[in-house]
Length: 421
Image (tube, one colour):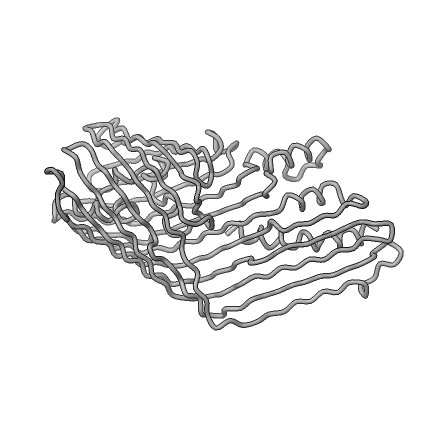
């Protein structure tokens, strides 16, 4: 019966497998991508000028001397996240024989609406800023998936007699793309003597891969006559496309120290997927399976593939508002942000945070920040840099759900280096 039971469970874990694959793969600026932003826990918006304005607010490019120029040699940012289990749980339970208490502990940490997994990465090969103009070449990937808690209960305890199992909270989405970003900032007007700046970033996307688990569900019931159930999964896949995005920025400086900043990201933002676009469907149906009558003829499964001409997928739109204070040695900021859709690395849950940067020595800035709400709840950022003449190196770490990376539910690392003149 064990062999039959394992196969009946396949109808329910089918969606989990697909979702897990998608979830281990950053949408366009829904997560911090520079070390300064990561170290401030994504609260760098009103403190970002020069090259930092390319990923935060293009309006800030208009501030400063017109002849200033900077070159970013490289920028790498990558991270993973979960709404339940963290690195500490993985280290504790991976490869171990789970006791009844271990299984209960794992299930207690997973919400009823499922186990959400996410990952993101962005690499910038080069970025340059010359006065009010900026350009950046990057590649990014992001994935997010959700596994129904019901699946884990079956994997841990098996199927209980006369109990009806239903799994329909599975989902997943992943994409990878390259982007060329062109930014410009200018002074627009003034309000009671306070300068007002505006900026625009145009992003041209080359889609590399996209996958969406549009539907994944399954049912199973154990009766005296045997185990019966069904499962169905449908995914949309593409391996190329082109897209376009706009980021709108505004900024007002109040005296020499205070800054108001606002940016609307991906308004609009989309990729039209047209290369090798297709839908894949898989279904399975079984009835009255027992150890005695088990044979493949009692199973009905079908896999189909249908080509698509093309389809559009939007990139998550997000609004961010920030207020910052710029001092001689201490800079600080408060930022509020929220998304207009709950997918990929974006969330409709508002996120509020605070960040500070202290110039301990002229060549050694120290950064820290925290956020509450948003996709990952409570998070903390820490970072620093090494500024030697025209060359600088930046590094940062952000954790979600805990102060220590080994005990949190997510971690983001970022490293960058460049030149400024």
